[in-house]
Amino acid sequence: MASMAGKRPVPPGGDDSDAKRVRSNGSPAEAPAAANGMSEMERKKQEAAARMAAVKAKLAATRKPSQATAASAPVAAAAAPPPPRPPAAAAPASDVEAKKLEAQRKIAEMKAKMAAKRAPAPGSLNQASPATPQPPSDREQRIAEARARAQQIAARATAPVAAPSPPPPPPRPEAGKSARGGLGIGLHPSLMGDMGAASAGKSKGARGNQQREVVPRVNPYLAVGEEDIKNDLGDVAFDPTIGSRRGGGRKSKQLEFNQKGKFMAQANALRNQAKLEQMKKEIAAEARKVEIEEASDKAFLVPMPPDVEWWDEGLVDKIDTEDTIITALIQHPVILQAPQDKFLPAPKPLMLTPVEQKKLRRQRRMADMKEEQAKIRLGLLEPPPPKVKKSNMMQVLGEQAVKDPTAVEARVNKEIAQRANDHAKANADRALTKEQRLEKLKAQQAGDEAKGIRIAVFKVDNLSSGKHRYKVDQNAKDQALTGIVVLHPQMNLIIVEGGTHSIEKYKKLMLNRIQWSENTMPLAKESGRPSTFLGNNDGTSKGESGEANRAAQWIDPLDENGQLKDLSENKCQLVFEGQSAQRVFRKWMNRACETDGEARDILGRSKMEHMWTLARSMRSE
Image 1 (cartoon, helix red, strand yellow):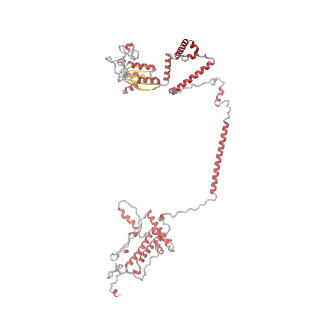
Image 2: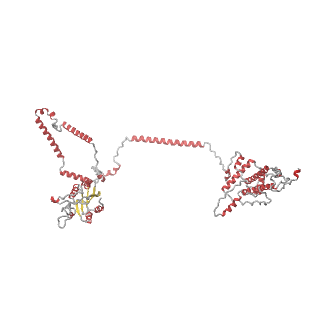
Image 3: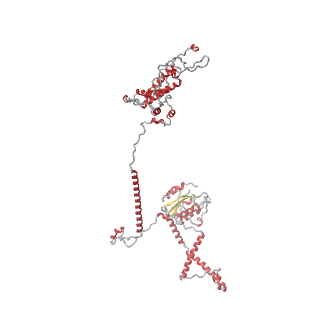
């Protein structure tokens, strides 16, 4: 005690009163006891109790919105009693502890006011229940607190509402009198919750027209972790979205009970309908079966024909009259041949191999021989004499050949010559005469022409050779062709028309058979006859003196020196080929024209002047 009497006591209002003192020997002194006899752990427990009291007051204000704001504070106070204050008799050991307690009290009051402002508009004060509710249990408080917090979070996310401006922070103490740390500083902005969101949005609204959505901030000091709530609730289910439901919970439906026998009646109705359908099908099948049987029976019954058919009833009264159209004669309508049938090609005979041809010939001759033998048996024909040849002479005339072989051989030779003569005579009798051949040819050409008229137009560069002109003229006459040959100094046009067979043969003549590059000497002067297309009666105009026509000037095979003209470049081209309804020219003729206009005039009489233009436009290949 003597050593302690000389030490200076610790000032009560010092800043470092709670710091450890250093002893004179350098070792730290023991920690002084907490003010009012409380330790650090007890002080923290009191702070946690004060925080829980504020949260409970907020829950009470949310749970009972109809009560007045003034009544919410007593309810919160009744639900959770405030932390115990130190006894009044005991004075605080230092001013720091008193300031801490005062700050805790102010925080609790401010949180209660904020919870009351966030709650919906309260009703009249008269509606508040006069009786104070009983404080809920600890488990119910935790569940209510979790649900209220989830509802607040959902309401902020869906429809953020601008909160009223927060109250100004409490004035900070002077620098000389305030503590350097702890709760001696001003209220932290995050303790205000959403109250600072509106003011922050207004301050940032000056940046052009950009408006950002205000994101509500959660107070980390007031927030109670979901994990902590789950641990406190135990195995009770936690749904954070339960607060987002609006309009109350799901409406329950009234139970509706089916009457007894309802489904049995429906089943019976379905069975009756199925039975009715089955009966309809059976009746239809029976009716169809009966109809088939009746039809099969009636098929064998032939009804008696009526005396007068219905289409003859109107003519019965006119049979016996004088002007009747019904007679004993039968009129057969004439069957007309279709116009396109004449253009159909004749059916071709079946192509047979040589072996098949021999077989048919053998069978035909055998049938003829059997028919002849049957006539001989009946005595209608005399039997033919035996056919004796030198090879079978000894077998047929055995005894006679032995007695007089010379006479037998002469007899056999005579019979052989007689048979050959009879064969030649039979062939000559079957052969057609010249007139018959011409008639047959004309008939064939007429039949060919009946199938359709075809036209062919040829262009020849030079017709100087008399041999070429003769073939062109004579073959056209032989094939019964009609047309015209236009002679011109630069080219020659040949137009022919006739049947299909005749035109095909004439095309082969003009395009294949005639060698147009060959030239021959004229034979007209030696025979004394005029050359083809150069006579006085060939239709061309004569010269002024009458010696020759104009075509002789450019179709002579000899040049001025008496030599044959070079026809190596001469050729014939097919200008046009097609069908015509009828013949355009009445006969085969030729004309000599010195100019193109004269040639067009001659062809224009038959409306064929376009052929000259077409031939002129063709290029020599």
